Amino acid sequence: RYETFSGVALNTTFDAASSKLDVEVAVTSNTPAVFRYMLLLVEDNIPATGEYAQNGQSDSYIHYNVVRDVVTSVAGEKLNDNLPFTVGVEVKATKSVSIPAGWNVENMRVIAAAMTSADGGYNWTVNNVNECRLGGSAPYIYEE
Image 1 (tube, rainbow, N blue to C red):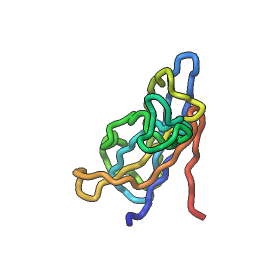
Image 2 (cartoon, helix red, strand yellow; image 1 turned 60 degrees about the horizontal axis):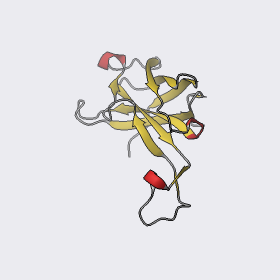
Image 3 (tube, rainbow, N blue to C red; image 1 turned 90 degrees about the horizontal axis):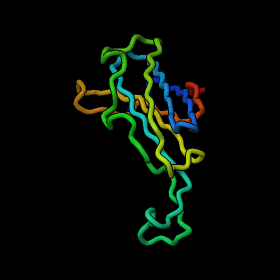
Image 4 (spheres, helix red, strand yellow; image 1 turned 180 degrees about the vertical axis):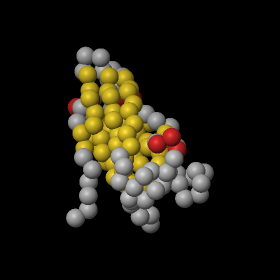
């Protein structure tokens, strides 16, 4: 088990007319570590019919947490120019993506993960994660 020492916040804007989603992710840390971030778009409530049929399931089966897009690389993208974070200082990154027709934006979420490496950048581990609906936001979550 890895200790969580970062915080992740999200702010998104969705323009339905252009299907453009703008995402701002913010990360803070209480440890001077190097971070990357990863963004995923997921959709819920997809009926298992037609092209989304589920082998061995009835047509009433519903898919949840379907990854529609990995907006960044699965290995994440650099934060803070790949330099260790200053403890307590917020670092932000932004991304824009177009949502294809046929995806139900009412059932979609953005998931942001802050990733760190314990081996000098060869492997990356998710240290913390947060999520919000398209057009929504999610503040830092603190343990009480």
